[in-house]
Image (cartoon, rainbow, N blue to C red; front, side, top):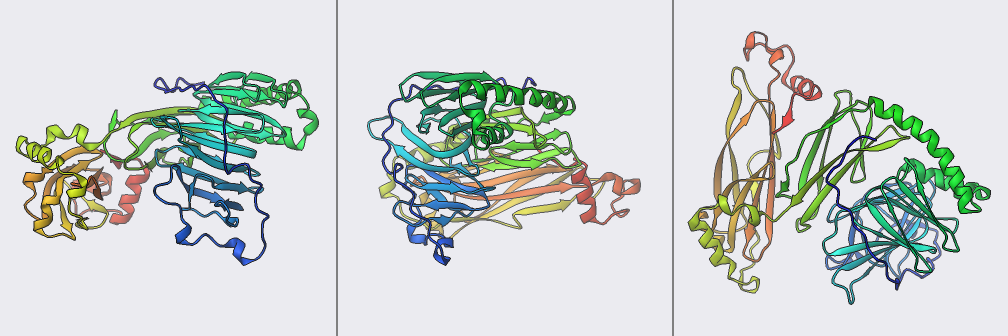
Length: 512
């Protein structure tokens, strides 16, 4: 196994008896007819005040979703799942759910789960995922104000900053990890702990067996278990027979894994230790054709050998963000890199960028309560297209331009309701206008962008009531020098659109 990650956050919990209200109900009988295919009206969409909000990011096949006392409906991308909701997947169906902090749950085929929250008498919210049948894969971020627990008929598992899966297989509970640490407790109260590359099987009598398997936590092991435990029940009669079957499978898996790792290359680009906006673009040079999975999103690396994906999360979901990259070929998979960074509030890091006068003005403004702040309908508009592609004519090596933006929906008199306007460049403070600097509705910020670089900008206006209004713009400044013989702009072999594609495919156009 590659030496991949040095900075990993592990979490352990002691499990208490779980009281689940609402999950123990039998699912309503599925109704036929057109009404069964409809999504719920907007009036029945979950409230933003829900204790648990997960969004469906990926849905394939027949996946059903049910609010309490409502009919089963087809789950669609964008639907929000909250506490007491249920999800049921049929054969060859699956759904990826993302939480506001970036945590991901994948409900695989032939699975039924219920989501609950217990916040009474605890300092942290307890997120409970009850697996009635089937299995759930997870990649859970480090939790600051909540804990995750997966419950089956046989036992329960405490999850934190961990990746793997938990399932109910023919009356037996199985938890399996590719990263992190999990405590599993049987119904008699006995606890077993497993770590990376380990799998635990708990039978109906509470007997637990921990197995060291290179395939632990993988999709392939999950599917193999489904085959062994469900389709071949004679091989799952006891923990010992399950152990023999899994070890036989794992031996062949190890052989395939070694062959894959011998040709695997993955050189990641660092993202820095601190993030100031709720998004990041991850890039790496990787072996063409491999599959890279981060936060449940799988991408196939193209012929140019470049992996690139942008991830976002909730504005207020501050804390450590871990981006575990798993590389595979469709059968084997292995952790190939871990990006780790702290997402912090802009005000924590941008004070030095604000003048003394502006800082004093901001401090004075912060004394005003949200109740006393005027409600304004502010929007931020950046000039030009959201993604602006600019060809840089030789012999220039950099572009000198301006980021122009305006504060719309308000008058000059409403500027007193804004505490600051910050311009971020690639997630870091670039220019900050404090309260004392805000005298107009239109602004220009000079920029210099090097040739063949992508620069991401975000304008963040913060109101006195704490609300943040954002607008984004990306500049792509490019020139494929070899497309201009003699180093002259007027000489070109390919038209500009083809020149851009050729440069991008070659990996010559990169983020700053």
